[in-house]
Length: 606
Image (cartoon, rainbow, N blue to C red):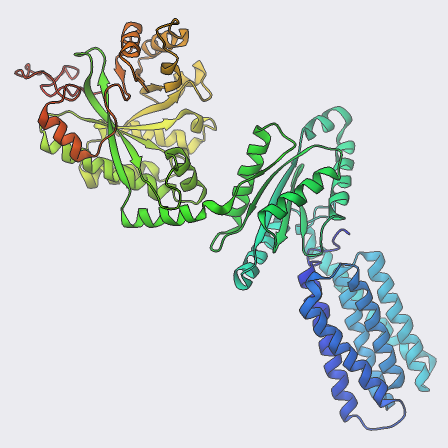
């Protein structure tokens, strides 16, 4: 049954109706005990008041688990009990006073029931009022005033309730809209936090709904949405709330429900309609906000769409312990940052010219988590800003220590940045503050941004890139070739360096020609005056092919794994070939020659 108002939830209905009953029963018992007279049946009136009190307590205790239609019986019974009390009260004055309880009936019906049913309940109360008072030897018109007040209060309450609820109700389906659902979700989270109960959330999206609108028209699309809403509502328990979250998307709130139970219910919903639908399921963990819960369910919905549609994907909240451990690691500074050399293919065949900072951490909650998985958890739990700042600050401090130990080094430091962090308005200023605090030069910092994270091309992200480059920081597009590349974007995107994804390098094998796109990328970088770094070089053969194609810089296990800064200092002191040049006197430098090799083999990337 579609909600008559945003208030028509099992919890609110049971508490309100129960409160009316308890108040009426308690007042009835009190009045029966103290009122004089013996005109009626004091025992019958007291019994009616006691029944009302017990029914009210039952609603307060078990009402949220009762079916919606049961509330109609409670309201009708309330009208009967008031009528019995009015008819049988020991004196006439008290009977007239008890007629005021008909207003409780009108308010309850107007608050929670659709207009036709609300009017039926109010009309029944008015008829009983008009009948009961004249039975006390009062004039036939004696019930007009209380009946009229009952009608007036009911109508006014109904109108005001619906006016206040319009902002929370979807007019097409009668379900809660996004605003109403978010309000309900926050209330459910508060209740779950107090009671310790579980809470599951499902986001459902109708597959290829746009084709219905395009081919059959919006009326046909609206009819589909209404049929889906009706079919799904019939399958839900009283405390389970369905909302139209926007367009063809629906949200389902499932109190006291596990993730597996939510998946089973979602499959029943899918089977109840002919339209295919994709769904994302998740559950709430203590301390999480409503927006976080919705975002995690939305990730599951996205994966269901990407996985072929018409399926349910669980985005489990079980990663939460990992997020807690990550939060503690960030606060305590126990994360490790290692460094992998970036080498020159042209100057001595493998001398390091820079390092890339790489996050390393093995949490107890999930020891085998990948760096990509760790970043996703940080983004999902709003930890990415602190994580990015920690890595950048640690990397700049370590690089400054390395360069201080070897004063002749002209070290370039590459650090990854999350696309979410880049979209923050204050990001460029935070980078500037870290550089100032650590003393690391801006012109020796390269920030690597994954290409796919720039797909949205938000104005804030682009503005940050421009600001950073104006301050001397260089920008590298990481994993180039796997995102949303286009020549026009590459020409206009604020960037200085391209890092070719390792999948291209892995395709270089001795038994087949080199991938043609590698040559195209090399030529393109030259045409656009962009440096290019090949990632994932693991063999001498791959290095030779890349050199022949014109690549100047490379990175991979063929040259070195990642190491802590202390090991890099040891390697430099021990003269490892990939980190140092053969001993020789450094050639004289000129003011405008910043590309020659230093004695220690470090070459600037610019």
